[in-house]
Length: 303
Image (tube, rainbow, N blue to C red; front, side, top):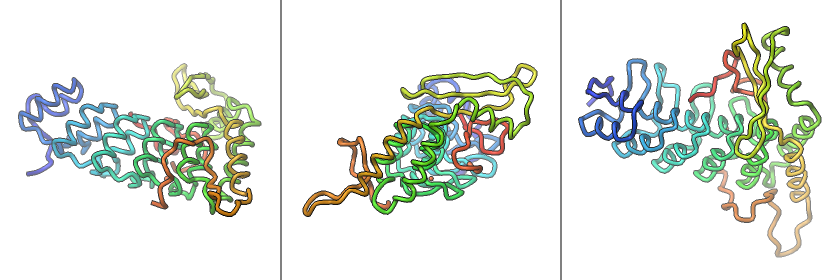
């Protein structure tokens, strides 16, 4: 049995562009769940990055390996692709099928590193609940809590704190995250993003600004235009002031004296119903640099 590109009619890849019933028919006709196309893209990866949770579950049930890398150089992981796109239901399906939450793909990214860096708060929560390590750094040593503070998503930071990112021993990381949140709370996000883009691409291009709600939080996107067409972009959430307050509270909790017989402070805030923090079981570029930058120097979000 091989994983050569399938030739069935309709092919599994044709079916993935239709609906789940078409996927069922292709599998029943003999298409292999582990099939890849001529470019090496696996069916599972394609379903994951296109947010097809039903198709993902069908492929997994038919034997697709949730950790099998995709692409010509086998560098892309389904879990990372889903996390990058904020496809939370797909992430849960992959984790339930045994996907390794901390597996690194090209550039050293984990699924959590993608989700935190892009402010995919619901996906961050799902990954942490599925066993992702909040203390595992990114490829350049960037702590997830610092990255989350720079991104500006309070919900993301709350989740990281709830799972131990602010626990005893992490005081220096909390302090750095707090300093970054305070710094960014005092700047004009639009100007900050425009400055970063002009530094990378040069001044003089027209810019367009969007403000959109994402997971109940505001995201500011700045796009540079070339001949009226978006050529590059960057985005950030705007919750830095709220994050600074959260982290200041975590710092106070971590430093508070503990009475005899009392439960020690963990740095966990605003999470009375959060699951217990797991045991010590994470884009190239400066941590906090927006990563939704087509044509930039860092990997482009997928899906």
